[in-house]
Image (tube, rainbow, N blue to C red; front, top):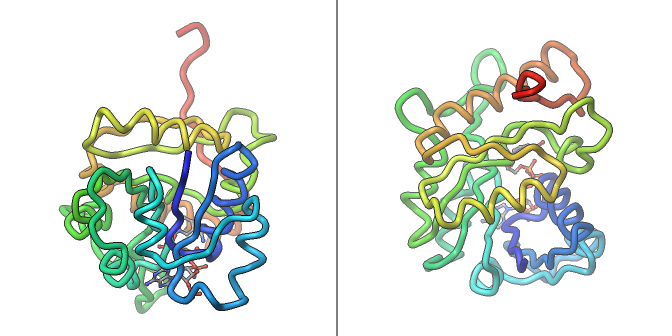
Length: 214
Ligand SMILES: NC(=O)c1ccc[n+]([C@@H]2O[C@H](COP(=O)([O-])OP(=O)(O)OC[C@H]3O[C@@H](n4cnc5c(N)ncnc54)[C@H](OP(=O)(O)O)[C@@H]3O)[C@@H](O)[C@H]2O)c1
């Protein structure tokens, strides 16, 4: 699939490389494509093209939003009309609070729903926000495939998103509608807490297990 990744940082770079390895074609949309700093990331993603956010978004079937949450408005404004596109929102609405990283919103609203309101015309899915890049880079070697929930309202496009998540080695699980982002973003915060504060390894992953024989 032609995948546009908006943002070529830790997550954008990791996902681009892993999807290129799985046979997908990557195009990066970045604020200033002429900057040399993005080139190693593009090279590592199968020689991905670097272009503007608008051009990348127009050329792909799936657009991955991989920017800090406070850059979401600017990135979506630059992307323009996303009608007919799948938009995979990997962001987490984080901010620095008095005692460290915390969620900037939640309970009865979510970053995923915020993104859907601003991503004109796109079928928005929240996924790939729940663990760190060490798992996204290489999901092999665990006792069971690492879990990755997928939430989104467009049932006809969800299998494609589940397929992209599975291509990374995750056990993709349909978590229901996009409003379930209200649970998936605190779930990501739990992972961050376990790694940052409880000092668990940064390649730790979640699993969702069925009893044998079921
Ligand atoms: N890091 C993780 O393990 C992890 C895991 C799951 C989810 N997430 C979430 O994923 C998102 C990205 O995290 P990250 O760690 O990859 O951040 P990062 O390393 O800081 O990278 C952010 C990228 O976004 C780009 N960017 C900023 N403003 C932009 C705009 N208006 N248009 C296009 N690109 C823009 C930046 O480009 P410049 O360098 O030019 O500013 C940079 O390439 C965050 O919302 C984070 O909460 C992170």
